[in-house]
Amino acid sequence: MRLRTGRARRTHVSEWTRGLVVVAAAALTVCALAPDAAAQAWGLRPRTPVAQFPAPLSGQATAAPHPTARAKDKIFVLPVEFADYSHNRIPSPDRSVDNSTVWTADYSPAYYQRQIFGTGSGAAGGSGDTLNAYYRRQSSGAYTITGTVHDWTRVGHPLAHYGTDTCKKQGKPISTYYCNQRLVTDGLNRWYEDQRAAGRSADSLRTYLATYDTWDRHDHDRDGDFDEPDGYLDRVMLMFAGESQVNGGGVNGSDAIGSHRGTVSHLQTGAGELGPAGGRKGGGSEVGDSGIWVDDYTMTNENRGLGTLAHEYGHDLGLPDLYDTSGAENSTGFWSVMGQGSLLSDDDELAVHPGDLGAWARLRLGWLDHVTVKAGASSTVTLNPLSVPSGTAGPEALLVNLPADADGNARYYLVENRQYVGEDRFLKSGPFQLGWAPGRSRLKERLHYERGVLIWYWNTKYRDNKTRANGGYGRILPIDAHAEPARTASGAVIRGRLQAYDAPFGLRPTSPLVFHLGGVRTVIPARPGVPVFDDLKGVHHYDAAPYGSSHDADSGTTITVDEEHADGRVKVSVGSTG
Image (cartoon, rainbow, N blue to C red; front, side, top):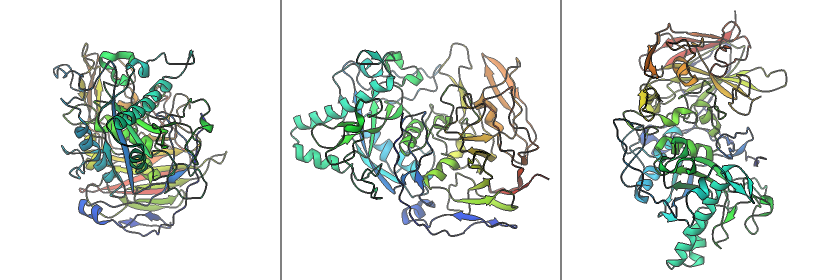
């Protein structure tokens, strides 16, 4: 699929240094912005907006730049039910055998309005946490969302018409996404028809929908101005009645829809000739006869948790999946909400408390206080925890600029400090596995991830994290400090998301990891801390775990954890292999 890109308008932002940065024979760049009043009230620090990049569907990624991050977005939210399946029909789970399925008695528009747009308490994981509050925290107050959740709208077809795995176009098999996309068109058109039947005029609906079109996502007129209408709804979010196919689909089984991000124009015949009058011809479909069109959207199931919502909305902001979408398990694990971190919880159901986006995703969105150093030049930096719950000054990540590879591809190490604060407090008990107890596939076993300094290898040669297809390489992968494959009681190599539990570098020893497979107990014993990463002398990729361990750059770079402070700060130094 050809990916559309826009020309990002460059915005000059002054850089100013603050925080605990000690430099030895190297110049550092620290990027930050002064907080606004709302951010100060929450103890948050906005970051510099930088280019976004598009991810047309879950599992698809591109490195192409995209328009600069906005301060606020307005989302058109539409819950949709089917001719044969209405909302609020998901049965209450038996918690003795199912402690993972998300459930509430009434999925009303008011429920979604609070969950998506509520201001929340400002604290990660609070009972009133919301999508708006999550992204406000992740951006340190630089980004908020607003909008309206409309009434449940019933389309005229059964659920299988949109969710079937045997989707066809003109009698020929085609990707199930094509059938999913019909729900966007049918849902918005039915909503429009219902509004007209209720007495609203075409002019009033056109005026109303125009309030959701203030952004030229792809700069279709090439004037460098993205803050203008383009004839398309800026952000569209659909919830469909029933469970996600990813979780088995409930009573709907293989006819259920999976949560995803997509475009109506994907697989659309003649998409390049369709579009608003006088606007870009990007395909999609018109909402009624309003003159306003829809193309980009996210779609989630009725009972999805906040983490799933944060993950799919991350796609709409331009972030790709970081897990291996081909089915293998890479080292990303629960370290990012764009990986399995969207499924974190505490004592609750799955995906209730989204994890941190991670430094790479925040860097791409312009929401990261970070220091940049050049490989080969010695430097020392003190890093705050990545998920800082207060306004403590100082950088949260370190970007090490490495020499390009032989083909000119840029490469970096991205160093972040992961501690049990903010979103990262759910790393302490939120990771999990299902299927550990025979006959109880929905019963989760809670695990933990270690805290410490997590080092990611960012290799622009690769467009995704499909390590199976890439020979163990990926676009952005954590390097495991304890990379030698751990094994189960039977001697089998453990899966990638478990292997990644002790990936951080640091001074302190790890804690044992206890888990079960088929009811059989396995213990990964405590191991000494690993304070030094050396990409020439260290071994970080093993043939026994070809997809769950990561290659490095072999550049002669060292990154050392020198100090770990009681308040969560760490001092790290960058040097060269001796």
